[in-house]
Image (cartoon, rainbow, N blue to C red; front, top):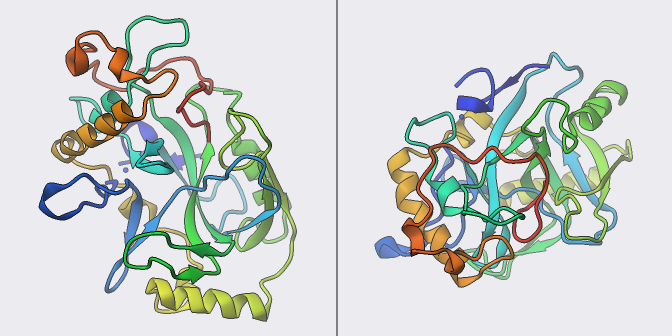
Amino acid sequence: MAFHGYGKQADVEQKAPSGKRGPGGEAPRSFVLSEKLKDKRNYLPMVFLPREVKDREYIILDDIKTGDDPQFGALIHQFWYNNKGDNAVVSLEGVDERGCPFSQALRERPEKGGDFRPRFASSVWLLSVIELSEFTYERGANQGKTVHSRRLLLPVPRGRTANSKVSRVEEFMNFATKLKGGLRLQRFQVSRTAGQTAAKIGTTWWPTQEPITPELKAKLTQDAAFYGFASVEDYLKPVDYKTVCKPNTYEDAARLAPFIEADRRANPGKFSNLNDEEGGTEAAAPRGDAYEGPDKANEGDTLPF
């Protein structure tokens, strides 16, 4: 199975668009990857299920039937920012020899104590999905408007080591090889169990093998127009990963990372209370790339996918 991506992320060369910025250099409202349409940008949050959600429905858009079909690998930092847990940026690990400013801004203290260390990014296989759940925008230009669906990115965990216990690649590749027609336009019911470390993408994915009905297609057509897609067919195409996931320049990342650090200081977590860091922001010297720690999900605000 061959993944392609950027830097250490796979076999070939991966820019996370900068977080949304307010006027005059204000702090970004969020850090979300996005795709450029003809007249606007469509933002692409990561799948992020609340605890104890049952039977939320998704459609996978990627045309994958075998392990030989292209899969896009990425190193993604997903984190809490501005009271939202679905913020994400692409890591610069392996992309810039100066390291990744986001890894430093997201530094954490190991469970056993010691110095704060830059957080390593999650290695994921990205898939494009449609979430079939009504969603009402709470802020921004679309505040108060409700849609039937959203176009999201699904970060399937690959793990940072061979035979990683957190990897779910085999699970989703089994869907691709055993379901008629592969992953393309397959509908899934997804649930997430309770617990701090339950996977944010859902603990259980269950294929329903239901077709896209005329009624559902009509709703998707309305949403496609709302988001600015030329047609529902375009809305149901996979994301152009190499464009969407091209990393920031080091300079842009260094400009944006302090906003993430400031938010974390204002909202400290169990292993990320930077206010406890001796000497302030300069105490933990940058170590280049993200810390290659144990391949496991930590508690606190480290988000297992």
